[in-house]
Length: 218
Image (cartoon, rainbow, N blue to C red; front, side):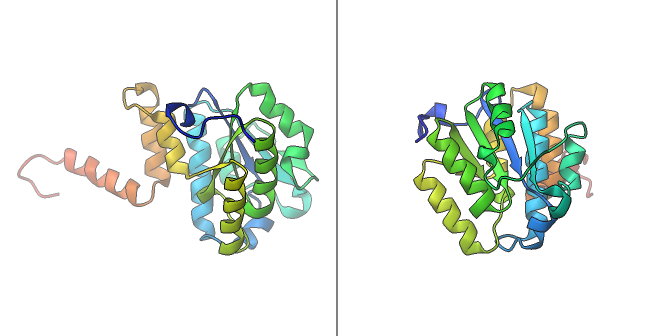
């Protein structure tokens, strides 16, 4: 089991302690993604990737048999255009030494995972890494399974192993933590505006109202 605390301030994410691994967001997996609306998972994982970039969180991209399953989603490649995903044959990402070595090279112990599918390519590495002393977080809304049951049961199984479920905007909020962290405020606002859904619409409306002189109707 992970040795990390599950409660208290130290249980929350910080950019300095985090490392992100994005697993198998590829066409083959998206084609049988039925636990969520696929466009939402795509939106959320790209938002998560952009947030990681804003906070300089090391991000490792990996695919499985991409010559048959398809290249990593273009939206993720656009966020990290200079990074070539680690293409595996092993279903369990944590059994690929290249991925593990890349994570360990960061020196960080809060391991954040998102991938397709939750029940296979996320659960396997999450459970194994949690047993090897990492504090593992799974971004559930940037992941998905072949059915709602498959996704939900996988999350339950990972929680039993000590893994912490989290959503992508929750991760973003924990990384920001304080609006006095001015160097990342602009980047956070841009990510939220692009991928925040209803929150993005409300934020745009707020900006409109702030720019509207008193007594005028927009």
